[in-house]
Length: 89
Image (tube, rainbow, N blue to C red):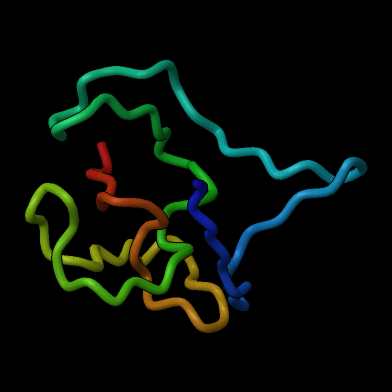
């Protein structure tokens, strides 16, 4: 018995191709203060690129933390893609 999953694409989704790959820009996994190890860099493509519905992230931090130096995509609200908001350094 398996589990089926599907998702609907959104205007703010990030995609890459063989000729133009999507570059995540990440560091090696490290303890960055969350409940799990993470590896985002300050210039990661997922920062402020999402459209979150939840008002808090996995660590209880209010979402979104919108960086005014990063433009939000069409349909996005400034939250980071993923379970947690990134703490800029």
